[in-house]
Amino acid sequence: MYDKAVSGPTAYKIFINSLLQTFERNQLGACIRPIYCGIPTVADDVALISTDPYELQTMLNVQADHANRLRYLLRRIPIEEGEIHKKILKTFGNIIRNDKTVEREIAFRQLAMKDENSGKTVHNIWKSSGTDPYSVNMAAIKVKIATGIMILQYQRSRFSKNCISANCPLCNIEPEDTTHFILKCEKLSSIRNRFIQELKSFLVDCNKPSLLIQELFDDEENLLHLIIDCISYHFLTYKEQVRIETLTRGLCYKLYHKRLLLMSE
Image (cartoon, rainbow, N blue to C red; front, side, top):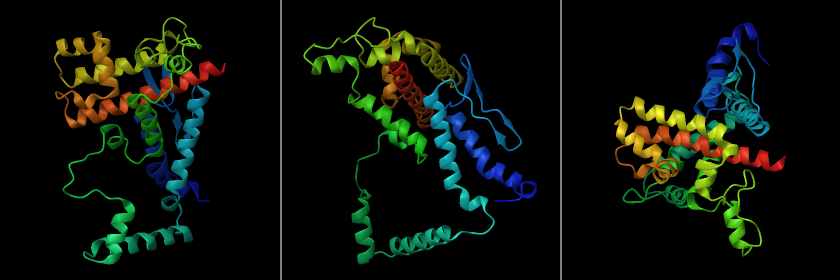
């Protein structure tokens, strides 16, 4: 494909470095208790390590997506598909820059673009996820939790008119509702504790009052609200909300996959 001696540094800057940042941002990879150790890397050789087969498969999918999206930059000679994409983008750019044309009106209608005077906004769960496919997949899981459409054991019991037990299938201690799944289930504590500790450390680093932090983390309702929808807490800046969304998005996603793994055993 390319001469490693010549293109190695370029490959690292373009591909490997951004890949490692994606893993770190979403807390994918090896951990020693609450400490994130990342992905072992020597030069441009990367080792993907995880004790969770679902997480390891996700990491493989992420690197495959990176390789596909960045292959134009990694190759020295632009390939035909890349040239076609450039022409498509150039044509689209010409359309949207020409006001009062039929083509522009059709493009806006087909793309269902929001009017400039519209008061509607995208929820922070989607807005903070960006365009990275892995982050979008994690956001989709969190949206299911936030909107109540994720089917936990409590909902299964209600749908079956109590013919099925509402108790958590993992710990069998109490009904598995959203609060139990996110905050209480003992079988998921190894994942939960790491994210909760990182979330608390972040708020401390943001110089939030200690009494406020204590009220957030000592009260289950406040903590659940912070995890599921932090945007309603007005003491958080937009930048802080984005970081909290990133952490809690990862928490919900990993809890979800750990639950699937334990139930399949």
